[in-house]
Image (cartoon, rainbow, N blue to C red; front, top):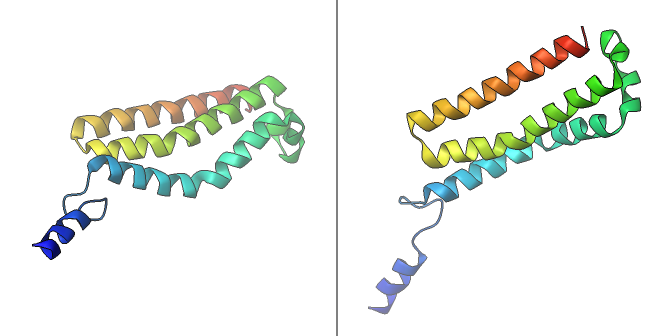
Length: 121
C-alpha cells in the first residue's frame, strides 16, 4: 500500500495529464515574459530618457517630447500586459475569452498606430 500512496502523492502539477489550467496559464505567461523582456526594457528606457529621441532619424526625431514619451510608455504598457493576457487566455481557453483578449490587443495596436501618426508623421 505504501508504494501506491507514494505514486498518488507525486501526481499533479503542470505537466501531468490533469494539470491545472491556472498553472498552464502562468507557465505560458512566464515564457512570453522572457521573450518580451528585452523589448520591454528598451521601451521603458526610451520613455524615461527623452534625449534618446535623437537616436532615431527622420520624423521621429522631430516629434514633440511629450508625444515621444507617451508613445514609448504605451508600447511599454502593452508589452508588459502581453504575458498576462496570453496566460489568462491559455487558462480560460474559451472562444469568448480569446475574442475579448484579441479585441484588447487590437485596441492597443490601434492606439499605438494613432499616436504614431499624431506625433511622428
